[in-house]
Structure formats: structure tokens, C-alpha cells
Length: 615
Image (cartoon, rainbow, N blue to C red; front, side, top):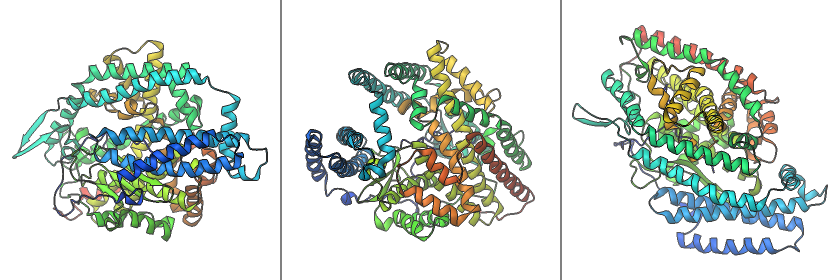
């Protein structure tokens, strides 16, 4: 159940738009065999109806002992998670058919009811009950809920009003952006859309085409800034008011609390990143200097996204993708590698992906549930590096679910801290990029993949900080009455970007970045999860090299236990010490700078004429 930001690793953006389909031997659509979940949609519907009756019966079974009630809740939650995964997949396969999405909403309600029943049983367990010991963390949460009882009537009334409004804002955002006016380009007999073809344009050797693509993309976003401002500001007002009415303080504060953090901890982490803004600027300057030494006159930001002249990144076959993703995780041992290879092997029909959008949702997520094989869904595989990184990321989520099944994690403890969940998947994607870098021979190829790794670190550390700071600042500004127009949002965005090493003075288009922050509209206050996920993921990437055997043991143990402890306790086990987030920032940026130095050495080789021209 991950809400995940769509990723484009460039110097400036983290938003992916649908790309044109790719063709050739590497282009292959796959349909996951979902019959391991339910034999048919009719069978799922019948089982869902029966599940609803069993949930109702359990909630009425007041005479059942707490232990029996809890264990029945576990059984029902496992079934509910299977329905959730199945319906999530059906809804994504055909986004035009609202019936699976409506059924998914129903199932989410059932899963919540089951979870509440389980927590109620834990509250009633006698102190020291042996059966409740493995669920001590969940029981502590349940007791805390009871100690500060919510105003149920008020909460339900607020949610009844706020939730439909927030859903409407999210849908409106999508409708507005679909009508954005992106400039069209005709060049050498090919048609380019600067919105849909943004990524492809960024890698064209024709400099004028790259520049037109970069500027056209921002022009398209700008064409909808006024209605987008109305949507975002209205959404923030509703979401913040709902949080305050429910006694949670501001909406950002509520989000931090759910992460196990508070505003002061988040602010300290953001300040630590801000102190390293010079490292990001130095990296960007290094890329510009390399472009200049490669023959580009007065290079600009759109000149830093193209591969070195003479090198064309290969399009991986699905077999190559499988092999590289599996080889990347050798640190975790043969069992993990074999499971990952099985997941990504097309023969096993556990991947659902297409090369054309059609009616498919432009999304990517893992599909897993207790007692069922893990699978993954990718709306469109574009055939470029970032699309394959997306698959590696989602495979990390799927493997997390697979390992919780191996560890017999309680179905009621399979969902927990989102930032920890995301850290596991980001670790897989960092390893995937590193694997491609390590196996490359040509200096141009090594530079291309190492730069992609560095750009990913920029995303995890700096872009995540920008997003967290920007969203927090928007909520504060709306509450204070200092934000009310698109111009206000542009100005605020420019201030935040400058603090974290970007140059909105030189590139004023960047001030429109707020328009492209999808999760601000679709999952408010979620983006801050990526800051902590990224900080941890970079450390995981480092530790598996320093202490492979010890790391493997710690990592797989935490991966398989579910969320049966506070996330900080699990991070302590992973790292070998309690997390000090500002200190982790410094440690991660040391890794970043060392990796940047390696890229600079590769640039020197390329500039000296080393490397083999590829086509």
C-alpha cells in the first residue's frame, strides 16, 4: 500500500509524465497471473461478500476471549489484504472502469474495521498475557488511543466533509494538467510533445532540441499555474482545518507524528541538509564544466542531462533487467537473490506491464498479501533507465512483502512506517544503478550510470528536503494568510529552492516546480517520508559494503518481522546505533561527495578521448 512519487532523475525534476511507447525486441508487455489471488472477478466478489459477513460477526462477538478475537482478526485481515491487492491491480489495469476502484474503497474500509477489532482485543488482554507479548508495540498504540479517546462523532463528520473534498481536489489537479498546453516540436520528420516526451528530449544530442524541450515543458506547466494555485491553496485550507478540528494540530504536524517524529526533529534535519547546499551547487557546476570541456559553448542546465557524445545508453531486455536487478542484491545472500530473480522472470507471470498506456493507470506498485506470491504492476515500461529503476524499486517493495511472509509477520503488522518501507525500496534502486555502473567498461557508460546514481542521491537528499520544506511552508503561509495567489507560490518556491542549492534566479521557470508536485495534491504531507527514507537508504547502500555479513543478517531480520516495533528501534538495529538524523545527513553527503569525485575522474578520461563509440 505504498503511495510513491513518480521519479525522473534529472538535475531539476522529480515528475514523470507518460512517454511514447518504445518498440523493438526489448519491448514486451506482460500480464501477471492473478489467479493465485482469486480464480476470477466473480470469485473475488463472492469471497468479499462473505468476508463482510464474517467481519460483522466478529465485531458482534463480544463474548469471545480477547485472544480468540485477536487471532480471528488476523485471519480476516490476511484475507482482506488479498482482496486489496487483487482489486488494486484490476483498478490499475483499466483506470476507466470505476467498479474495481469502488470495490477497493469498500475493502479498505473492511480492513480498517478488522484492524480496529484487533486493537480492541489487545486492549482487553490481561497485563502480561503471553499470547499478547509478540504484539506489544501494537498493544501500546491501542492503549494510547484509548487513553486519549477521540470525539468519534466529530471525527466522522470532519472526514465525511473533508475526504470527498480532498479527493475532488486531487481529481481536479489531474484534469487541469491534462489540458496543459505543451509546445509541439517537429524535427527531422519526428513529432515531439514537450510534455510527454520530456525525458527523451533531455537526452537528445541536438542541443537546440534539448533546450526547446526543457523550456517547453516548463511553459506547459506555466500554462495552468492559475487554476493549479486555486486547487492547491483550497486543498491546503481544507486539509489543515480538518487536522485542527480533529485535535492533531496542523496537517504537517499530524503527518510528522504519524512518522514518529515532530516538527523540531524535521526542522533540524532540513537545516542539516541546507548546510550542504554548497555540495549540490558544486556537483551542478562540475556537470556544467564537463559539458563545456566537451565542446558545448556556455552550457546550461539542459546540457547536463545528455549522455557523452558517442555513447547511447542500451535498452535492456526483460532478461537483462532481471539479471542486473538480481545481481545487484548479492549482498543479501542467495535466497533473497533467487526470490528476486523469480519475481522478475517473465516466465513466472508475476509482472504486469505494458509498452503503451491505453487505459492503464500511470502508476507502479507491488502486489502482495499473506499466502499469495508477490507480484508487481508498472503502468508503462518506457525502455529507458529510469523506467527500469522504477521496476527495481517496486521489486524492493514486493520483496519486503515476500520476506514478511517468510518471517510470519502478523497481517495486522504488515503496514507501518511509510518512510521505513520506502527506504527498503530505494535501497534496491541505488544498488541497481550501482550494478550497471560496476559492470560497464567504457568510461562513457560508467560515467552515465554513476551520474544516475548521484542524481538519485540528489533526489533522495536535496529534492526531498525541498519538497518537505516547501509543503510545510505552504501550510504555514496559508494558515498565516500570507499565501493567496500563484505569484505567492512562485515566490515561496524560489526561496526554498535557493536554500537547497538550486538557482531560480538564473532559471526562473523552476519557481513553477510546485505545480508538478503530484503528491502534494494526491497524498498531502506524504513527501516528507522520502527525506527520511532517502537518508536511511543511502546508509544501507554504504553499510552493505562495509560489513556485508553483519548487514545481511540485520537487514533480513528487520525486513521479515513486519512493523512490530517503533521504527526508530528497527533503524537502530539496521545501523547498529540510534539514528541521529543531522549526523546521518553529514555521513550521506560524505558518500555523495566521494562518489562525485569518482565521476569527475571519469569525466577526465572521457575528455581525454578514452572510450569506444557506441550506437
